[in-house]
Each structure stands twice: as structure tokens, then as C-alpha cells.
Image (cartoon, rainbow, N blue to C red; front, top):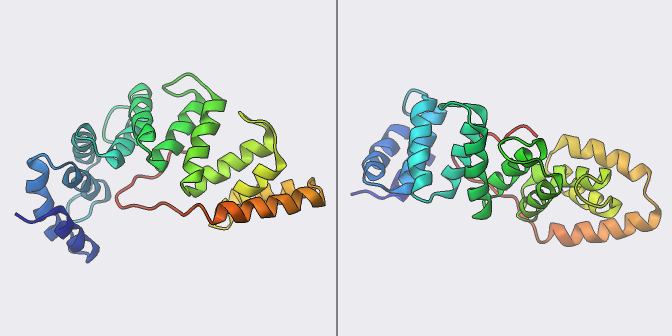
Length: 222
């Protein structure tokens, strides 16, 4: 039997039908990675007709078998009612599970739900901590949100230097809202704060790298 990686190679070459033929028997046999890829095919309409309900079913099977990426997607689909009835409590549970397992996208999504009190008790301080964990893993939207929270003192003590660090890192990777907030922040910073902030930003830039991965759904709106 072919392997999941062989399916990935076919997928990357644009041979979506070939990829499906490789992944489907593996997925039916219980392979969590193949199940996640099957979910992706149906979510994106690649080689099959787009069907969010079928995508959700595959993602759920994968998540129940321990695939962290699928856990995030299940949570996101529950949160938005895509392919399944909207259920914010179930969304928060799956996102928290994936976040605890280290998935940066889930950490961001769970932080969004904590900020808004959706499916979980509102806790802005806890949201800031999840944004921090994702930020330290190089998740650019989380860096933008964390910088904003430091700039405004939301869930954390107000800190211009930390705000500068995270907004700058996000802005360097095309997060427009971070650039807007950074411009306002810099107006109120002293020369000493700016110097300290640049040093701190350079130290973090060397430690963080962007995260990426196939078959992820769009993040929840912050």
C-alpha cells in the first residue's frame, strides 16, 4: 500500500485525484494523517466536489485519532458552524486540546474565544498568555494581537517595549494592523525605550520563525 507521504507528493504536484486515491484507503483504515488530508481535499474542493460536511467528518475522525491540526480545524468548524451545527462549547474544548498540544493556530483561535467569552468563560489574561505562546512559536497574527494587548494594557501590564517588539515582528510579515498600531505607539516612546525595544526585537527575531502547514482553515476573526 502507498504511504501518506506519497500522497503528499502527488498533492504538491497538483495531482489531487491521485492523492485522494492514495489517502482514502489509508484514512478508512484509521490513519489520522490521511484522514486530515481527506478533510482538506473536501474542505478545499481539490480533486473532489467541495463539501464541508464531509470535510468535518474526516477532520473529526482524524482529531479523535490524535491529529493536532485536525483538532484545530474541528474546533474552528464548530465555532463557525461550517459543515456542522455551530457549537461554541465543543469548539473551545477542541481548540484548547490542540492548543495544549502546541498548535499555534489553535492557540490563536482559543485566545480569540477566551477574549470574547465564546464557549468558555471570558478571560483576557489567559487569552494574552495563549497569544504569547503562539507568538513565541512565530505565529504572526498572534504577535500582532499580543503587541496590541501590551500597548493597551489588556490582560497584561501596559509595556511599550513589549508592544514594540511584537508589533514590529508582526508588521515585518505583512500584518497591516500591527503597522498601524506601531506607528501610534512610537509617537509616545522615549528614545531610551526605542533603543531597548529595538534590541529586544532583534533578540526575538532570531528566536522565532513563522509557522506554516497544509490544509488549515482560516483563523477565527479576532
